[in-house]
Length: 208
Image (cartoon, rainbow, N blue to C red):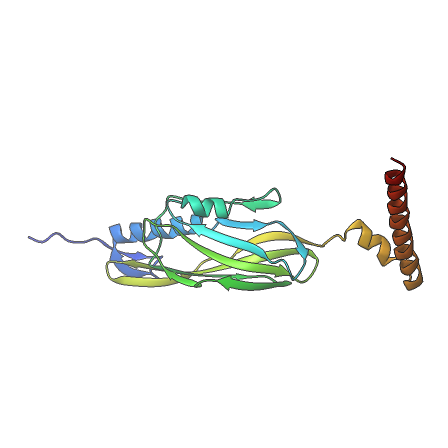
């Protein structure tokens, strides 16, 4: 005598009827994925400097590779959140966006995942506008249970960034406020001072 299967309308599967145990598994995966989205490594303070983009990394998985941990270790001005120990879906597509940023992905945006491995997404981010900005992580995931699959757009995650103007070296700041004639005089004074120092050194050498 075959055992009857208790079917339920599963919210995760858009209210499709699947077994109660499979629905619980789908809910578990969905909750785990939701928790794992928080794993973002980025600088919370950025300077407007197109020559120096900032690396941003999102890391997911049950175990982080040691080399990857070293590579993405935060500096003093970075904020990092890491989540581990969860089941990943069949695939996950992640997009990083932000108003006032130029963002270039490094590698594939969509990846097919295995339950017990870690994956990472990387971008190079260049701020273009100063002020209080934010980066937005958009996630599209796919969960498959017993031959049935459903795609879900997860709730976006937002990460605040303070974008400021990169301070100039003191010498550049001083010269920046001088006229052309004043800059020429400063340059001449530097040459004269250097020549005087050389002359004094030669006299001391000849007297010894």
